Length: 150
Image (tube, rainbow, N blue to C red):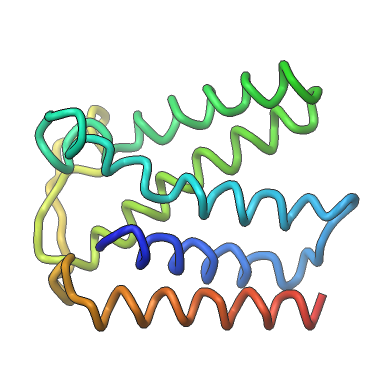
């Protein structure tokens, strides 16, 4: 899946989760949704820095590390609540990215280093314009539904 698809999938899933929560105090759910959506393509940094694609950066360990880094960054700059939200947003961004990539044909090990289990559901190619556009559009639709209902 490409950046556009990951962004949309993240908007979709977190807006759906946010429906029963509402905006929360000070619109904190909106903060989580958009920070996660912005970070949703971070695992694909492996392509830019020259390490094997869908290895370390597409793992539960990477999700935990990114969550901790954003938790520390936001906690240090804005306080404990935002530190917690930074962890949640960073962690969810990576996990949802992996969910998107699981739908493609290329197998990878999302539970590394905790378990050696290569997975792929093989529903579409990562480069599929149709799939990426559908997730992008569905994400924005769900986000506006979330805004309207909340």
